[in-house]
Image 1 (cartoon, helix red, strand yellow):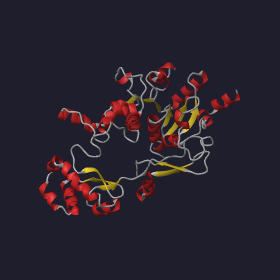
Image 2 (cartoon, rainbow, N blue to C red):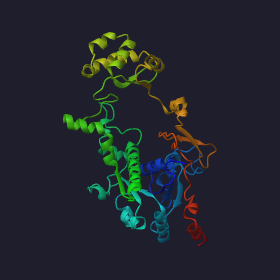
Image 3 (cartoon, one colour):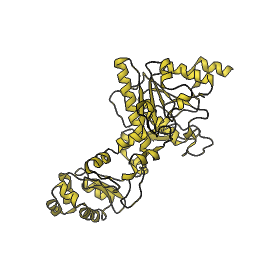
Image 4 (cartoon, helix red, strand yellow):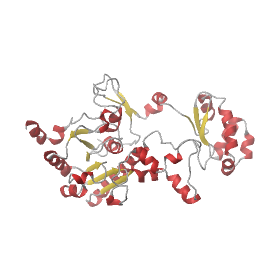
Length: 390
């Protein structure tokens, strides 16, 4: 039994941000019913596939963020389907959607309508620019994706090499961070309802979330009055805190503490540098020259040699490929690679596990992602059977 096994979630989301949020709830034991538009979630057909896209029910994208959910297919433009949805709302705890502002209202299924059917309902939305209910802006109603949020929220401006262009982060943080924050908001609303009996509206915007995510850039602008920009893998206020090329790869070293700096200098055989630059301010002011000294040293060592020299004394780690991650015993000991069935393929696939660990109710993926409309009869019961007979 998961920590949220008493909750039913109606998941109207698609693509990434919304499904990742409801995936977290499902991993924690919530009964998540994915209500898909006719034809299903847009990303069901997205690659990669194990072998044959025609034979397999969905690709890795859909599998990863929809594991452990149920699926029914509903068309809100159809009166019977709309009534089926409202019957589910009456018994649900949470509704989550990530449509553009105003979309649910077109079907008379917005927050105000749904709370007429269930006054204790927690209604949550993830949108590019938030919802007018919590702060109206001219951007609401515009479509948004991760790339848009990263661009507007300052992430791209501070990501990349100094002499390179603005660069998005590899993972879709505009979606994923927003999803995690929305999940926190939902759980806070659940706790509030436990105390008061009141449901409420939870709204998380991607643009807003990226401002929170760029945290450091916001206070730098306020304190210094100048906009921070790209500086590769280094840190604006700490040194050494960077990636260094070795003979066979890259290793990161985070030795900004004086004790760590002294250990690095000893490993380099350059105790004189520790004496000459004893404070963090000294090292930061002379970072370019000191980086050259360190880079010349690391270039003569392999990743393993460098890590063996510093590990346990200084925060250090190799820059790993996913292939190396799959081979890391730490990852397996922490259950961070989870096998699930891939319908239509001849083998299981592995997806990322849940990083939240709990002593009594540890979250975990609870089976593969659903086939489209796989759980109609289970979720709708007699209503589904009547529709099938008709």
